[in-house]
Length: 229
Image 1: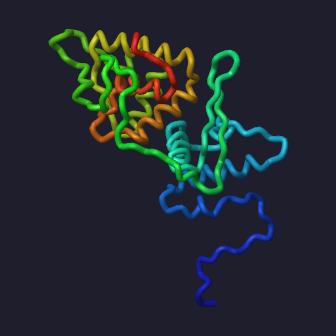
Image 2: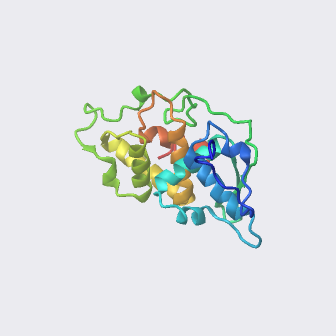
Image 3: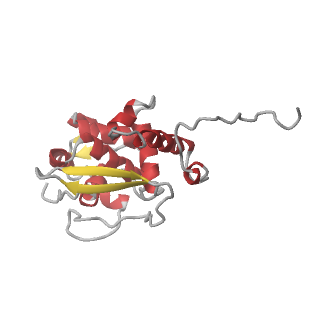
């Protein structure tokens, strides 16, 4: 019969109801729509508590690809995050999947530096972040030499976004090490991964992905002050 080629047959049983608003949003990628549908299939189950780690285990993609889709849902207003502190001082996150996206979304092209090292405000600028001045030091280090789980995760996400970190001086090598150790004391690796993905999803064009800029943004991302490190 003409005109029916490629047609999907209707199903009589509905297993999961997913918002048409999200599925038909042309500004949302297919991977984000897939993750949205997966989340929806779980949060309607009775007596079942869904965690982010559960979702990750259901996906063949690696952590970086998953975080990219996760942060797209957050950025586009379909996934709302609530942050609070527990009695022992750790941050607790809860999430709400919205049927209709939250229109109150701010995605600035540049971010002001929170508590920059020199104590002055300003915008991120890669010319301010040149940490390979050989006039000040003869020793330059690769970032991976820190052999730190958090730094390695940063490098992984950075390279996924087509950025590659230059060598760092002795002074900045120590500053990065101390700052990341401070962050890791208060932020678990999953929260850190979320923060790095969010950072690269909204990184200004004039920022080369230098981890020093990320560390300066740590107060905005994690409410952690690293200016003394």
